[in-house]
Length: 271
Length: 315
Image 1 (cartoon, chains in turn blue, purple):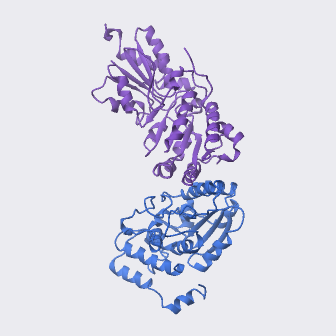
Image 2 (cartoon, chains in turn purple, blue; image 1 turned 90 degrees about the vertical axis):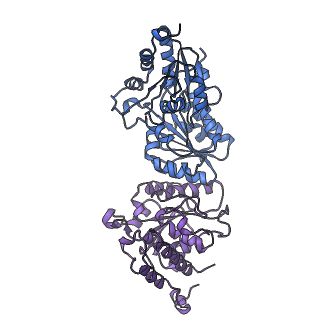
């Protein structure tokens, strides 16, 4: 199994190469790459050789506009073999490894509630992880689902919020303020952890810390929109876009494989 | 006239749902702060009823998630809010993947009468018929609703059942006999066919009685399944009729009149469509609202007499 840092680096390369061929939601795909890399290598019980394994943990990408980030990770794992450019711009059931069509925002958490409850009623030891955007939390349906999950003590449900602080029109706090976000989840009855969403060791630890306990849990992952592509980082203009040849060269140079000692240092000695 | 017992759809379905949950361990029921349909389930299988509260979008999303986990959900809410507030969840989460979720809309049409337009759902049939893979049923009385529930549960795909809010007028037992997927001829007659759905079936029968006194021999048939529409059976019923009148407490698009018109085409008999429109209604009872929109027995009779008088009767 690849180290999540390396899985994320390769997935980002796929995303930027794709963005040189067609317009994609670049910022949203790149902000969550490290999160998905940790989830698929360490967080989920998952067999890439059998994406329909009945006992797998389930990942619902509620922020469906990040589809190409999910496809890129699944392609690195060997789950998706198709040319990513041929796949739909939002997740669809027709794509291998995709658990549910999403991208009309604010749907994923309700689906996750139903899946988690269904697993519990069937006596299956199965966890459900719902990755949401932060701007997406403007949709009230999320809070209907949050209330439901706490009421039914859905301990096998985990939400991961990709807290990159940018929605299409700019800073989430200027559009429709979400803060104090952690307090909101706590007030709804959820266990909360926060982590640097690009530090794979911190993400791993935070998810592990949320494993035991009563009721649903949320990881608020602090991320940078467009992470890994220097000119796109934190720039709302790269919510969606396509790369010209020069931009592609710059992006790929930034995403080049680090020398082995540098990678080891970046991991802080962890493996 | 033999009549069916006159329970409400809710009491009849409460018993039928409890029996269905007894028989099928994969069934699970969900409500949105409305438990009347699920009293039997709650009494016998308390873990297989969930009340999501007043949260229709979440109701439908949770039902979709449960269906994806292998269960077969039956979800109920007041029709106007189930349909309009959760429409995107219905389309994307349930219908596009064709999940086996049965949706019960209580108080469709004008059933909530004096509560006003917030609670009227004359658009439910139109909207639900536009969803991919969705079966749409509009039962005429409590016994018909029970037969629809059994049919919907065995269909294996998404289904919407429009239920009345209160007591239905008694209907002949024939109104719930056999397969709800095909029209039922409740009364034969040579001159005109009254084709009705839901509450308007009772209005059509009353109109037929009045028309008999006018010297017009009217047949009455009920259509319970609006989508997929039983076109062949409707075509057979309408052939050789001098006039067909449809009656439904629904907006036109996708409703009984629309489907019948498409089925008959230019070759069929003349068709008069009685249905609701977008006028803001008065504060009034269900019966008075049916009259306001001209889909009650008086409206049906007038439509027939206006188009089909003694002068044009067969000798």
